[in-house]
Length: 204
Image (tube, rainbow, N blue to C red; front, side):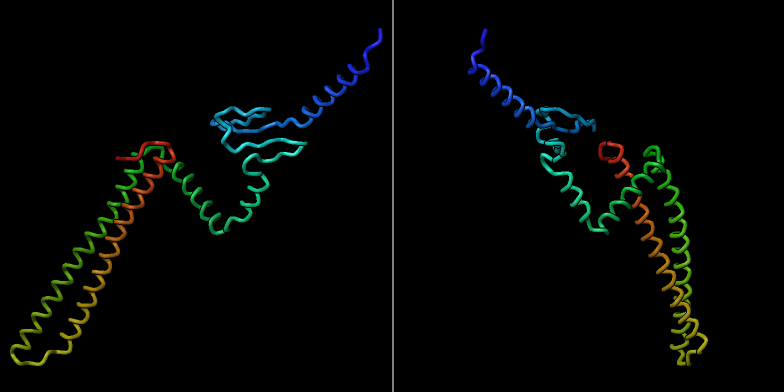
């Protein structure tokens, strides 16, 4: 039995077309919401708009943002920005390693505030004392002046020293008060970031 040559030609053409289609078939790569990498000739609809990659002619190419392009962009990152990002990551890791729950953050905050509050109270007391001393010296000077007598050099020197001490105590108190506010802000920020890293709802 002889086979029609036209059928042979048609079959050959069909095979060639199928081979051509298969040769041009693309293999896609995508990552699901759990971070698992998948490969396939089709992409699930829910991942169609995500960054995916297509393997074509033995070369991996990005469907959306090419891997090579990403590498180039990363290589162009400002060193200062990269340094800041690295430092932020280090702080996040230290935060998670330091505290196991929010209560520990509150306890640490309280301990630090107690120390600063002690300094604030101490400088407040010393400032009041210095101000009272200066007031007494001014009173003494005014009494001498009211009598028409010259002010002793020693009294003038004592007043200058008392004024300098008042200024010093005021500065020390101001620094401690700012330190207290800084401690509060730092722990508030750490607690907020801790909740973010743990995936917790923002504190009310």
